[in-house]
Picture 1 (cartoon, helix red, strand yellow):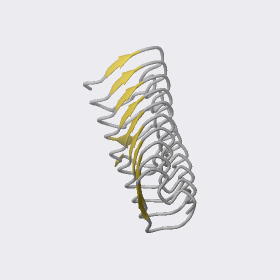
Picture 2 (cartoon, helix red, strand yellow; picture 1 turned 45 degrees about the vertical axis):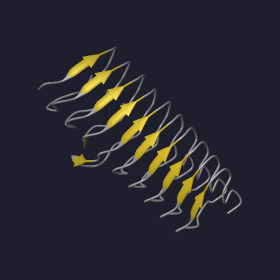
Picture 3 (tube, helix red, strand yellow; picture 1 turned 60 degrees about the vertical axis):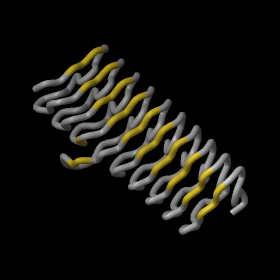
Length: 171
């Protein structure tokens, strides 16, 4: 099955899944048939059962991910609780502590910086680069916030671009 597990309860429920790497307490714990995943950190991707081809590095990273069928998800989450609540969202790149932490079904988001895009739940195709960039966005889509606190207060508005220190902070 070509799996590697290191840590108590890592890959504990694996049945037929292959090409997975789980390092840390309960990393990929509930994975049964999800293939090609890498989970490093305490409870990283611990709820995933069937999601394929994801990378989670950090405690609780992608902790709630659990699609209903074997699906190539291509999510990458690096940092403490990065992508914590992603359940069915796909092709998200979330880097930094709490980056994209509230995201559930939002897809195609890029978030780099601590607390960037961390309130997003369903918004998609957003790009946040910088600490707290788009931090309060919940459902807005197609936004680009580049810089410290760029578009910080944006919650539901879509199709905005702000570049620079606190650019569009009150949007």
